[in-house]
Length: 168
Image (cartoon, rainbow, N blue to C red; front, side, top):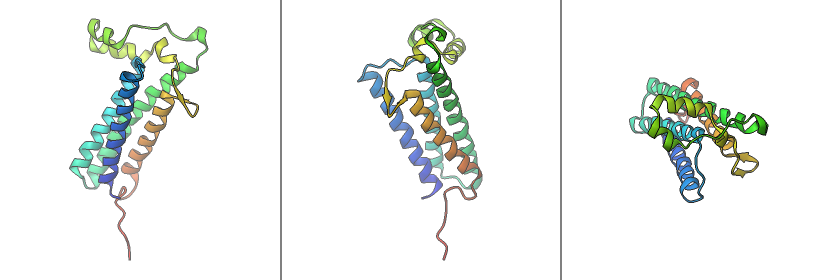
């Protein structure tokens, strides 16, 4: 498998994860909190970088640049997921108050203030509404983001990336 196809698979994985997020929101009725929205942007960024890398099919230097960008976007998503996991671990008396929805914030606040508010998290972000195999939604996103960071590091530092050729 070539690095180009690895980037293609990363794009498909990010698209599938975003599909799951929209399914949970629109079919299961789970309203995303501000940190959930930011994690979605992390997957969008990683997916976009991977799609561009797949279409471009870069050589060595380009593969490393795309690997770096994947580390940055997935690393940002991982830190946001970590923030939400931390909020979920707080005792009930230390959880911040619930805030208004992201839609409302976008209507009344400048974009930068919405971002600052979202990064702080709210009581909504601390609520665990779904678990699978013992992990909450941000737990699973952290797993996927960590995998993307490791993959990006492999693209960045592994000689040849995933472009191994058969040797006789």
